[in-house]
Length: 103
Image (cartoon, rainbow, N blue to C red; front, side, top):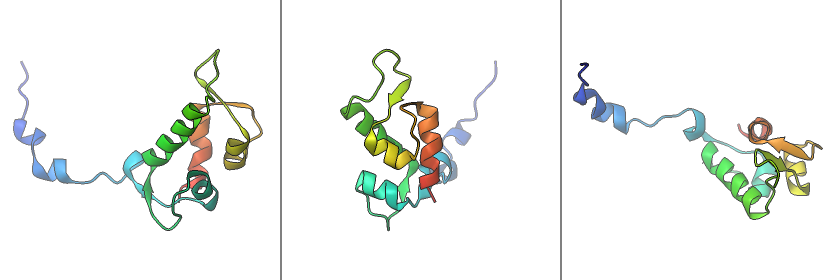
């Protein structure tokens, strides 16, 4: 049976160090995204905060496809933000379009 090194699990250097990549990397946002979200363009935000806001917008406006929940119905506000005329996109495509608003 393999033993687990508990010191590694509770190492203060490991658990207290901030991860600055992926969803937790502080980023600046574009003017278009700032006007869509109402966030201040001069502040930095985590990517997950932006995605959470957009998903709440989609959920509150009932933009998930009723027949297939994997798809998002794109309304006029999202068309302006994503600059894509497609009327239906997946969550993966949504993130692909949003990445151009992160600096």
